[in-house]
Length: 118
Image 1: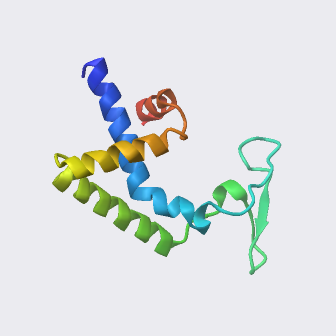
Image 2: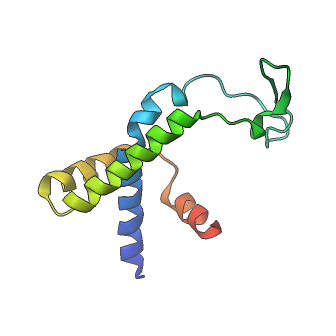
């Protein structure tokens, strides 16, 4: 794929992800306190649940199944909307706006590095 196409695909992927998941980051899913980890991998941060079980923070599920299902539904709906409307002027404007909002995410190079590791 030519460099220019890679760049456009990266921008569109960021904007689409932002459009699909934006509401989830406005909700409590992204709120609360982040624990401090001296090791950096959170194996030194322990959680104790209501049954008295201790587990490392990195092994705790922090998204409930109903939240996961809602995110999957929203992403599927966003992709469906994208596929149906990508060539309309209104949708193109929404995609551009979403990309501008997503600029605050990590830079595009870190996205490429994550993609290559898969």
